[in-house]
Length: 550
Figure 1 (spheres, rainbow, N blue to C red):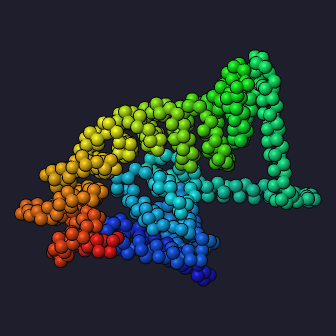
Figure 2 (figure 1 turned 120 degrees about the horizontal axis):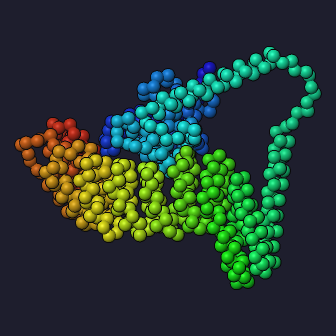
């Protein structure tokens, strides 16, 4: 069957994504091939969006489909982009009209990572989640998101797929045997339509919700009329707690929210007796206890839909006593989607008690500690710095990188000296993260420290990747001191370690291109026809960047 024109166009887009995935791994960001590959692919997307609003790819183990047509198939494991997405749980990827060039570039950088060889500790789904693209959406099979050791992850995914097929075969076999063994008499059946079924379910849900809602109204009316009688208050409190628990199990957060709103209103009312206010405080504390928060986690993981606005209002009404139980379930949750929801809740609640959030830094699980650091960064409270400084020496590199990034964004007393020490960390990725954090601070002292580090003789023996990162970070300061330093690197002559000297000059050329100062053009032109391929390539790219402004 001949492929439709739409599918042919999308197949062309996919082939260019595969091509870009390879190019992004081979070439630096300022390489002409890198730039052209990105521009070509972005152009294909724009052509598609001229008459379509979204492009959705459905991912299977060895194939990718558009609409109902297969546009990619590869039975092999190596260089199989379908399996690359599939093994991390991705089942659907959508690009929306309005896709930005920067979004496409970041997406390609993520899929270009060599997760088997590079020092990257996350998977594709986690990196996509952290970017939170506006015009790129994806669907994840939550069953595949349970933390599994990397070394046997792919085999477990494949086995799971095989098991699913086996279970389906077994079910069909059993069904066939039953049909053979039993003779079914003809029984007249009046069919129920989808509409009938939907109406029935709606009425059942509405009936249950109406009764619960009325019960809440009656209970609060009793409280209003109680005049502080302790026996009435005790009974009403017990019924309201049970209603909260029941409603939470049903995923009916609106009922829980109504109870909390009514309790807060009574608590703040000058007409409420002190005895009544005491019980209202108990009601407001109850949804944040460990039992109810645990139920909340189960409901969220079950897939029950909860209105986003209602959930946000619910979280805002929670007391700080909910922080500890939320941190606990954060470590137990199996799905990224729900982890993100709980993280957002903790960002809101953490503003009420940063110390309670900081207790999560003592958790034995590295991913919980990293999430807590992320939460603290998004809260933005400089009071968190003293707690964060204690995690800089954490055993897990992923945690160290996260805390360094956070310290750079928060700034404050004690941060600079810690980041300076991290520039000498045994791990290259930590050293780079520290330099980036210093550039985020953006102070003169940070600039001088990075220049001193580059100027140090020991820096010559660092990997080229690290040196290039440091020079690119230096381009953040677009001033005369940085410009003069880079020119001095270009002028430096060396009879020994020429290869290292060429690397330093290439990095300086790259940085000059990022600075965009046209005064650098005469110096860069000297290397356009250099016998050294690296210098020749970097200088031509830098000249184009300065002359054309990109």
